[in-house]
Length: 273
Image (cartoon, rainbow, N blue to C red):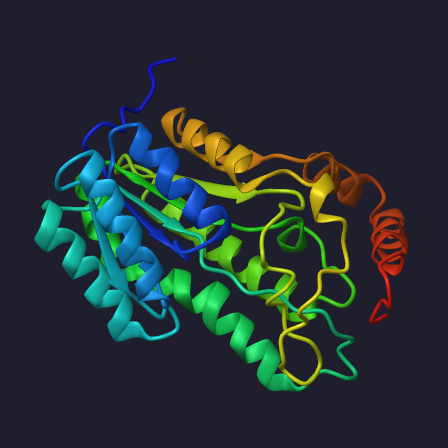
């Protein structure tokens, strides 16, 4: 297999200030790519911009971006094109989770998740797509097993990831003859702050993670797999047994899958279900 070369390619990464996004910044930069970092926390990505440019001149750009704001996303793409001349890869990574029973949750929580996880990907893709098509580049999005099967206590998260995956599937088919590569990323549990920032029923951040983070895949491990997936132009990158087995069990015995996920999520400390 001939690998897609990342050297000198322009990569936009949303949610770049921490977790998977931050790990991907360094992973793609090591491959010789030019990095455009998008995040609300500009101070963090600005420091990384300075660091990366000291390692390789004119190789990184930080753009303050709230992906829920369409004009911010348009500005992100325009800055990338203005600085590096185009866009080769867009990694829609910015994400937000939740942990609450639907009967108890304030509906603004679900709207917030849709705004970040779905509309953030839509806005960025809308303004980057013509450049990606022009360069026969890659559109990638970080989804979840929650986008393959509904998870109890995660209604808004599942809905937003289902929506993002359906959107990306449609983009793939629309541009089937144009050389565009589209990759959905289905990781298992990764040790990031997404569970700390997850919203509970009243819309506040959960704070303490209910899971044993030390037993999870690290962001760096996942970033290496994402880079390889882009190089090999994979259709779907699945990194856990849950992700690989879910579609099969759902096809053969969906009621069993319901029970397995209910029992699994019920084991969390103070489960919301």
